[in-house]
Length: 197
Image (cartoon, rainbow, N blue to C red; front, top):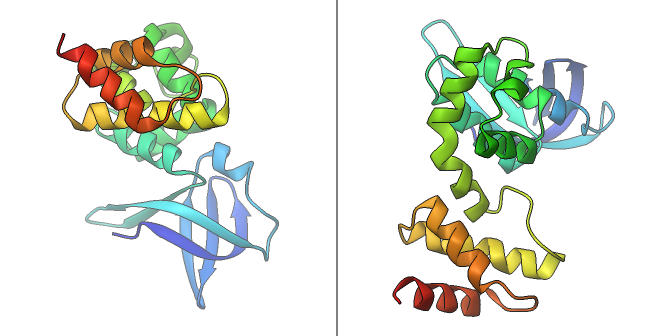
């Protein structure tokens, strides 16, 4: 699996681009959210990648952030959503906006995206709703307050999720114990104490 590319950006032709890595040109398809943040041609670029192997082709998809790649991987696990449609979704929505729409069950918002009808939107929401809370635990969605406490809160959520707590429980516990300035360890301890009450 090719997980990351670092090299010189030599071609931009949405949705395709090419990265020269040590003299080898890697053709990559990327969402528009990644294209907007690409450097100028000839400059260095780092892309987080996902390789799709088919009988007739090896397709490499690139993303400007790990959160985008994670969402892409979640999307292609949904029935009836392939890599091209996943790219279209990522091109039309930011990651946080996507997960907020899933949590809200916003079928109309998804139906506005190209290639997504009402039935596909409903299936997408149904299949990813459980993951929507887990993404908060992994620090993929918007947090609360300033940068330092948000990091601690996100780390605490990730720890609770890795211990097997369901997304809704992770959210409830982390919200209940969050206070400005608390470190990750303290948040986790408080959450675990609250969970076993």
